[in-house]
Image (cartoon, rainbow, N blue to C red; front, top):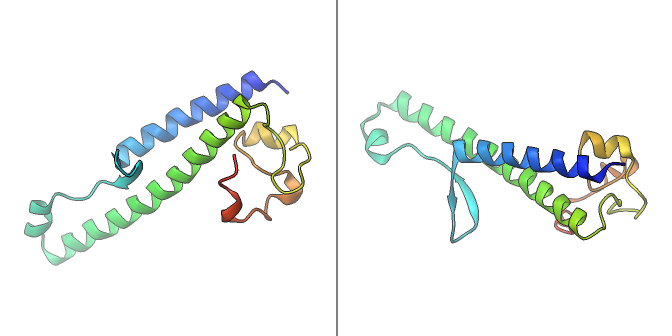
Length: 127
């Protein structure tokens, strides 16, 4: 497996995810977290009930999308750390090598195909 190719894929995807996050959210430097951009208060205050409901729905969708993108960005960053630490490509569940086919399809994968459904959220933080 060409680790340089994997790293290039991860870096390219990281750039795309960060661009998407930037278009949807504002980065809070203190919390080191993204938040969805909200409608300016003066616009929301002047909106009728239907428009206000639309703003609310749009904001909820942005929040959900930002959350998904944040998780993906974390997965990518974790994979890049594993590459840098020479422990990339090992399943978090069984410790065996993750299939090359899986890593090429998802370079940030943390488990082999056999265990892809077994990884619980609390295990995700282990880079």
